[in-house]
Every structure is written in C-alpha cells, then in structure tokens.
Length: 438
Image (cartoon, rainbow, N blue to C red; front, side, top):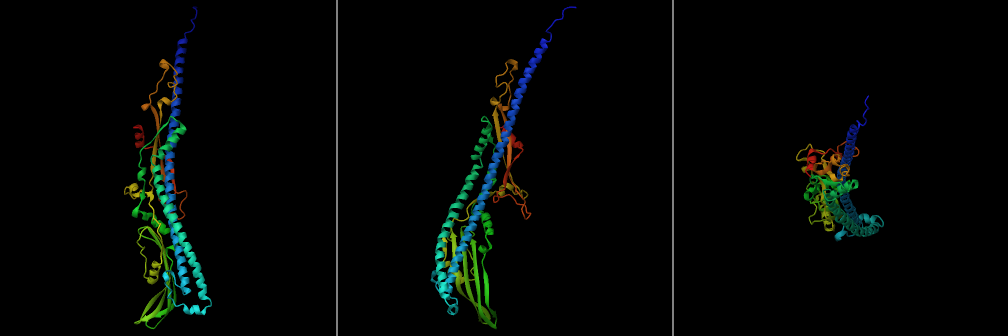
C-alpha cells in the first residue's frame, strides 16, 4: 500500500478558522450595536418621560397657585366681613349709649325710655363703644396690611410665577432636563426635543376671562360672608284698623364687583315704625347702625340693593374705610379649551405628548471595526444611516384623579386640581418621520 499522505484537512481547518473568526467579529459587533441601540432606546424613553413629568409638575403648580389665589381672595372677603361687623357693632353700641356713631351721626331710635329704666344702661354701652372704637382702629391697620400682603404681594407673585413656570415647560428648561438625562446615560448621546403644540395647551386668562376664577371665589365664600340678614317684627299693622310697633331689618353682604377689582362689605340695621296713612300701612325708617369696609383697585362702587335700609346704607357709604392697595383678581393660567377641542364638544380629556430623539454617533459604537480589530477581509465596516444610531421616545401628560369623587361625578381636566400625571406612549409615525429628518 502506498504511504498515506497527511495534512489534507489543513485547508478545511483554515477555512473553518477563517469563518469562525469572521463570525466572532460579526457577533461581537452585532452585540455592541444591539446593546448601544437598547441604551439609546432606554435613554430616549427616560428623557421623554422626564420631559412629560416636568410638564405635569408645571401644570400641577398652576393648579396649586390657582387654588392659593382663590384662598387669598376668600380670606380678603372674610377679613372685610369681620371688619365691617366690628364697625357695625361699634355703631350699634353708640346707638344704645345714645352717642354719635361714625360721621357724627346719632342714632334716631327711641331708646331713651329703656336707657332710663335699666340702671347703668348708658354707661355700659358707652364702655362697649369705647372698646370697639379702639378695636376698629386696630382692625383698620390689620386689614390694610393683610390685604396688601395677600393681593399686592402674594397673588401678584403667584400670577407672575405661572408665566415663568410655563415658559420653562417649553424648550428652555425642558431642553436642559433632556440633556441631563442623556448625559447621565452617556456623554456621547445627543438629544433633540421634537416640535409640539404645548404652547396651545393652556393660556393666560386676563380681562373679563378672569370671571372663571372669580366665580369659583364667589362659590367658595362662606354663607355668612355672602349674605347676612334677619328681620325682627315687634308690632302689627292691619289696615285700616290698627298699626303699632316696630320691625327691625338687618342687611349685610360681602360682594365682588363685576369689574373684579373691588371687594365691599356693607352692613346696616334700621328700625321701621308702623303707621297708618290714608288707610294703608306705612313704615318710617330710623337708622340704628351701619358699616362699610372695602378694598378697591378702582373708583366705581359696587352696585348694592339699597331698598331695604336706604338711609342706613347712605350712612355706611359716608363712613366707609377703603384699602386702596387691592389690585383685583389676578390673571391666571388654565387650559385653552377652545384650542383643545377645536369646537368638538366630545373632546373631554385633552392630553399633550412630547417626543425626544436620542442619537449616538457611529464612531462611538465599540464595534470590531472601531477597535481596529481585523485586517483585510476580516475588517468589517458598519453602514449606519447618517452614521448614527437614533431612537425616539414619547410620553404624554394626562389628567386623572387618584380616587373617584365621593359624589360619583366625573371630574374633567382643569388647572384647578393638581391631578396631572405623565406616562410613556408609542411614538407616532409623524414623530418618527421628524426624527429621521433631523
């Protein structure tokens, strides 16, 4: 037998070694690209969610600041109510003590007989009047300081801060947030916020549009501030037979003017004496007490019903105390419903999305080619689109209560309750197309 030749498998072995080396380089590069692609995708989602979360926080800040402005307006109304009641009681004590009230006007009610019958009646109410006079003077300083602080300082600052916060939800601060998220994952990442219409999601309500907030303020007033009245009838009138006695009418209210620039608290009390004239019941007014405390940013008085106690009401206007540092209901921010619905009443839960494109230059992907591994045919080059790896992440801001309302009603989105949240969503075709065009 001829001698068997050895080494005939060397060629096959070299071929297998060559293919194995190529496969190893290919698997290494593919793994690196896949890993970097996943990192880019995760970063895009994180950046989009962070941007949406910041916008949700801005909307919640608008809600908190709106509620704070409402609370301050209600507090101003309640303060004026207390101040008016203090002045009212001071003038009533002067009436009982047979002394002059505010404006030098004396009480015309017939109390002289009672004052003579009850010992120390006049002295007691004179002391009460003196104490309430001091309290009224102190109260004037208190309401001046409080209304100036709540209106001219706090509410003005809150209104202006909404504008600044909303500006940060566009592309100035928002771009910095996205850049920070991208840099925290990889300093080679490049981030871009895709254009959107968040500017049209909300608007600043000014002028007559402030009635949206003013109506909430009016509804939040306590019943005593809205209206305080009672009648006490101590007599009878049956025409044309008999008429004697009195009826006492107390009227009071704290109201916001239609121009939204003036609060006024008015209280008055009159004694009406029954009499018969030409067979008909007549009533003759005798003012007993009056009060008027207001905060204004204008000179026009608040229209008030004067038919019940007109004489006492005129006296209250003559003795009013005005805090002129009140600047009215401030402009505020809320959803722009006309822009959101486009006239469609079925749009009940508007949302706004934000999309972020994160890219990694191809030169920063640690493939075998970038690591200078392999020569000749063992050198495999990559062919990225525009020499980069790009991913798009999208998120949206939406409104949802953490728990259902106790009354079972559905609460629609607004900037008066801080229930705005953020969540990831699928990028739209338009957003993907915009990212490819960058």
